[in-house]
Length: 217
Ligand SMILES: [Zn+2]
Image 1: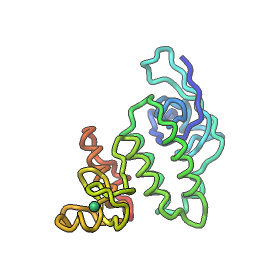
Image 2 (image 1 turned 180 degrees about the horizontal axis):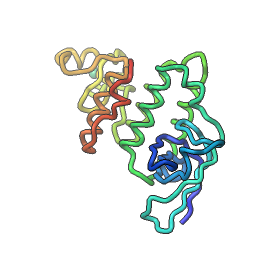
Image 3 (image 1 turned 45 degrees about the horizontal axis):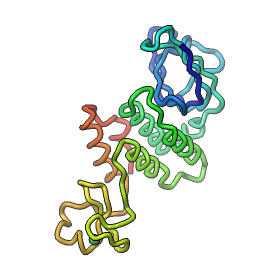
């Protein structure tokens, strides 16, 4: 069996002295796992986390780990290596994808958004709230769509300064007034989205990845 797709190399772990187990977020097949032969001893075309390229996955049986042939086209992470905060954001996004997306289920819009996010990060001038936007998209893909367009309680579309932790929907000032100790104050920030990330992790029975926990606001 052979599968080929554009992808982002999101994780690489050495096994033995030569090889590595890689995780590639592919456009067509979602997260795929496989062995990259000689990844540790490669003299050229060295596989690196953050590269974007073409992954060809081969296995005799569909259920096997399989092996990757990896053709890197560009390394979007290269410029991030000198910026600790952006690097931490990239690592957090990759760790969340690795931990929470099921393998071999297509997430093509999230793939495109992740590529867009990496491009935004790699612009030297700073990425603004690119990470936050990525994480909101990620939560939406996992069924936790945050809706900031109208008040969850009265439908009002103005004075939306709070968020319901229960529904992930905005709440207007009037409706929030009796519950100020229970609702989150907008605007969204990574501390608020972290609560939803924690919910997802809990429901899937996994720990919040360290790369996400240490993320600086
Ligand atoms: Zn309201």
